[in-house]
Amino acid sequence: MTKITISEREAGQRLDKYLKKYLSKATSGFLYKMLRKKNITLNEGKASGNEILKAEDELTLFLADETILKFGGVLQQAKSNGFSENEKSQKEQKLEQCCRQYEKAYQNNKEVEIVFENKHILVADKPAGMLTQKASSEDLSLNEWFIGYLLSKNEISKEELHTFKPSVCNRLDRNTSGLVLCGKTLAGSQKISFLLKNRSLRKFYCLYVKGQVAESAQIESYLEKDRQSNRVKIYSSGQGEDSSYIKTVYKPLKIYRNMTMLEAELVTGKTHQIRIHLASIGHPVLGDYKYGYLEFNDRYKKKYGIATQLLHASRLEFPKLDGEWADLSELVLTAKLPEIFQLIDESESSAEERI
Image (cartoon, rainbow, N blue to C red; front, side, top):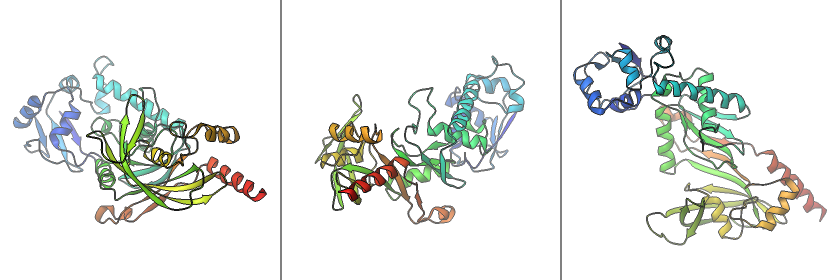
């Protein structure tokens, strides 16, 4: 017999979906049969599987430990220690390997700054050069760092990772720095996803572009992505099912002789949106070799060592919220500018003064 207490992080899932994660190799027919026969109970009573789990709910599995392992389940640590590595489920062994990777990611990236945290979400300031999510099995991304952080603070157990894995909620390109939203609980992930989808959570970026931009404006178009080349194209009207409407609003913060520091609001959030929109009006992002001007980029690469686009997710503005989300209501979060931004500002401002 195995007892499982649902944590606040796992709450909000349907019981049958939770069981499918916990016993991933079991068929749906087997799980529903166990529910009907009360071999799996919820709060000591019969369950159908469509119940929404709440924090502190208790599941009881009247199944042998060997059966749980057979169907890919993970035993409690005390029980698990009684089995050899060969007897443990493949899922349990994989989970242990992943946990070592999470711990390594956290130890190797202690410089990641936490800008905000409550029981449901965490907002981190991702450095440029770090992946938001892994692209290969060996990568140590911000997502691995995040789970490693929660494990180090005992905010989640290794066993809980079997049925709910905390995750980042939005993505930045590897070479884009700044604010990334992370869901510590299922409820937190769902809330952030909802706010992003209805565009009520506003996202602002700081960047340098080629040339002088004197006025604020907005750009609207339709975007299509070529997955093979990892490039995008924009059109004035939709080109079919693969095209997405995009909108970017920008304003100048500081104008220099050859460039402008802009703040851009990403009203929609699509791949390379800011980069392609600004390139389309003749003001590509500094360091953007994919959509920008080679001569312009090379000049400042030689001067400052800039090899990739300078984009920084600098500010998040939450809408008015209430209830258990009141501490996020109209919250404004900012990330300080990276040193390279400050270096360019000081150097280019000094150059202006010498003219």
